[in-house]
Image (cartoon, rainbow, N blue to C red):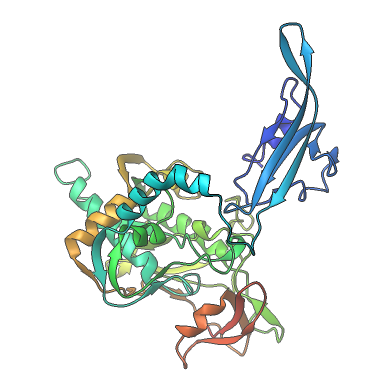
Length: 391
């Protein structure tokens, strides 16, 4: 893949060792199926490599053997290894605590600064299966920010839409990786829980046709459901990253999961004529494929190769973090009533298809006792199985 270049780098002359990460895997450990991998030495093509998992789970260690070469040294051998951080011990190193004390306490004081209030808890347990307040707050804030920014510019009269995704929705990050904000005061740390990345605001000028393609890409979050099947069917496509499941507010639409996905998780076309997005409307009418819109997003998405995004007519970059825009919005609003506008939904699936999805087991505490989503049973590692009726 385009961001999995360690294997190629390990083949270069003069590279002594590689520290890598990003995709939450471990090495030595994973990637045993690749050629020229030595798990005992922790080498790839003879080059020592460490990839230490996620969230500080492992310490990566490189041991290099040096040999005197004139007035300098050269690396002649080496190993890569991992040490898993002790999950049971709570013993800390006091020297480390003392060294970071001032910075740590200053950070804590800052992130506890209040920016607003919420009338109800905000969670992202069900953000993949229904329009969700944790995304709605982000898209509302982005729209609020950009509508003010475009006043007096050439883009002032274009309708503003806003795209947001469930950044914290479990998956490979584990059952505790969900937005969880209690009712009451919202602090800066809670905003970081809503928006975990240091992205900056960006806006794309695009047509209604591009908006549809963007949503077709997002709809790849779901597996194709067979209404006639009596077997259990998993709704969520595990290959698809949740941060790519963009919800676009300002339009209304439905997703038909009985149809095949048009794009795979990489954005490559797999079913040219497929269409999962139906009843796409703007201002209560079918969207005009030629009409121009501003869609607010972030610099990561705006610079990417997403379907629809890659056809954008213009890109407006704001040197302002999305998180800062959300904080400004909350300060302006003072009190947030966390509710979704339900601008998207699933097309009803006829029959008695057994459709399930997985989310945190803690979601059963906030799930309604009656309704289309029902708790079934715990699965593993803190996750649980829920049934869903698409009606």
